[in-house]
Every structure is written in structure tokens, then in C-alpha cells.
Image (cartoon, rainbow, N blue to C red):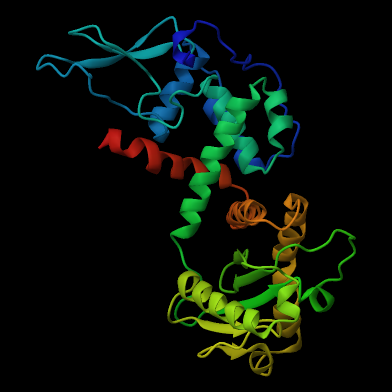
Length: 340
């Protein structure tokens, strides 16, 4: 049963203190409060719908599916969870206010979707957030999955580097002894090619899980050639042609790229320290965290790790304000076609 078909409401009292079981950036929190605030005589639900329509998360108009010449769809208050719905004044056909939006067919209130989206943006544990906001695990998982797919799609649209830009390349876990000591006993399952675009603050990363068995690369020259080909493919797909690509000591030599030793000859001591260690700090943290997802060497494991690294590296690109940025992506993917 769709959320629009019930009169049960899960909206919290807007006067109650808003608290979360996870940390929230001030800018993200401010936007969330702006959406849910109660400052008129209308119901909170109606106010939220109006604000989301203004933001672009809900369509401002829809067409009647009956499509008769005299059909005219308007937004009216109704005894449904969202308190408003689309009604055709001619034929009486009703549609959920969520039609044509990210919220469509999600079996929870619109406010709960906003809450779970905020939790996702803050990288909060899904189970903890779902329990706190009283959302069924299946629904919470669906929201997180949708946002994951949007993040991966958005990440794939942009390449690193460009004219007069330097893209660094290093291999994990080969680089650990030099960049960061490995203090855990958990075994490494995957080799990960790390790319860092130095023109962005914070640094933009692309983290690629290398195919094949990590142990084979240590003893098999044929595997080395396969690794080199894969690195070439990733560099071609993930970087702009005009980029200056600098390879670390643990990355196979690639034609057209320069070595890290050559680059640092032209840098002062502080820049050398940044390029050799600090620039990789967050990427190393993500690669290390991904080891928790590994239950053994398998294709499924690699896919799961790659998904995690894509989403986490995309989230790292944006600080406070990521909530608004992600919601604008949602608008573009779901709602813009209805508002044209």
C-alpha cells in the first residue's frame, strides 16, 4: 500500500527539539529545518509540500492520466498522509502529490524521506537512522540504494584533471609502508588504484578496485602486464586528456606519464610532503575501511568494495552543504521533466 493511501501521519511535532543519533553539519541541518519548519496556519505537511515544490523536489504540475481535452489537474488538501494530492477537476482522477518525484511509492512520510536523505549525506549508519526515525528497514534500504545509485551515476560524469592540472596515481596497499603504517591485522583482499586530482580542495579522488588476486601480482609477470593494461584503461576513462599524470613508485610505468620523483624535483619541501603523504590521507582511510566489506576473494566482494569506494569518494568532495547539493541532483534526475 502506498503511503498516500493512508490517513496515518508520522510527522513529528515541529515544536519538539530536533535531534539525530549522528552528527550533522550546520548547513545541512539548516536546510532540513527550513523544509520542516511550521510557521503558518496550514498543516506542517502542506507547508513541506509547498517548500519542496519551490525547491524542485516535487512537481508543480502533473497531467491527468485520463487525458481528456477538458482535464485540469489541481493540488488540493485531502485525507492522506501527505495531506494534499493531485485531483482532476473534470474527471475526478486522483494522483499522489509524490507523482513524478523521488518520493513516489516510498512507504513512509515525506519528512522521513528527508530525514533518511540527511542521514545518508552525513554517512550515518542506515540501521541506526531507520530505528531513530521509525522507518521500516526495507524502506530505509530502498532510500539509501536510490541515493547510492545517484551518487555513482554523478561520479561517472566527471573526469579528473584537465589542462595545467596534476593527477597523482598510487597503488594500495603497496604504498602503505611509505604513506601510512598498516596497524590492523585484517588481511588485504584487493589492490586499489588511487587517483587524486590536486587542483581541488578538498581533493577529488577516484578509487578503482583492480581485478585479479592480490597475491598473484607478487610473483607473476603475466599478471603485471594485465595490471599495466588495466591501469592504462582506468587512466584513459577517469582523467582528461590534457592532464599531467604522475605515477607513484608502486604503479606500473605508463607511456606519456611522468614519475613522482621527477615531479618533486620542482617542489619545495612543504609541497613535497603534501604530495607524498597528506594528499592521500582520506583515500587511504577509505581503502582501509573497505576491508571490512571483504569476506573473501570473490567477484561479489570486489563489486561491493567498488560501490562503497565510489559513493564514499563522491561524498568526500563536498563539505557542509552536501545535503542541498544531493537534493538538487535528485531534482534533476526525477522532477525536472515534470516541471518543463
